[in-house]
Structure formats: C-alpha cells, structure tokens
Figure 1 (cartoon, rainbow, N blue to C red):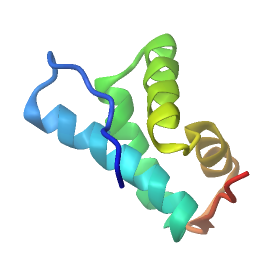
Figure 2: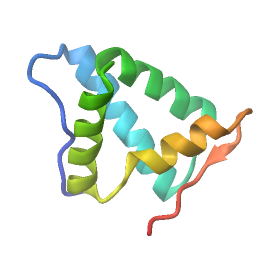
Figure 3: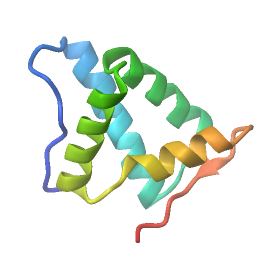
Amino acid sequence: MDYSYPFSIEWTTEEIIDVVSFFEGIERAYEKGISRQDLLTRYRKFKQVVPAISEEKTYFREFEEESGYACFPAIKEMKAGTGDEIIKVNKI
C-alpha cells in the first residue's frame, strides 16, 4: 500500500479510525473478501462521521484515485445482501 486515506483534520482521532477502518474494509472486499456484516458495521460508523451523500462521494472519489478501489461496487453488493455472506469485488 503506497497511498494515504482521505480524512478531515477536523475529525477526532476516533472518527479518523472509523473512516480508515471503512476504507480498509473496502480494500479487503477487493483483495480477500469481507463478511457483509463486518462491512456493514464499518459503513455505519463511516456514515456517522460522513452523513452527507455529497461529502461521501468526495471521500469515495479521493480514495479511488489514491488506491484504485471503488467503494460503490462493494457498497452496492453489501446493500443487496441479506445474510452474512462474503462480499468479494472483482477489480476491473
């Protein structure tokens, strides 16, 4: 990993940890797979820090530019699931 995670200097340490944890979950969804429940928990914590859709899109775009991992396919698969299946996204 040779990139940094997007965050705001206005966030608390705990909020930064929650956002970074979410982005690490997205990475895992591409690299190994992650349980739907784990990703859902991380996403809910992320949304507590970044509740606005426009701001979410900005952070998602910044993360994708840095890492090459798009958040939307993983989120879409997570929302479509019903149980605790494994979310695994194929990088295009």
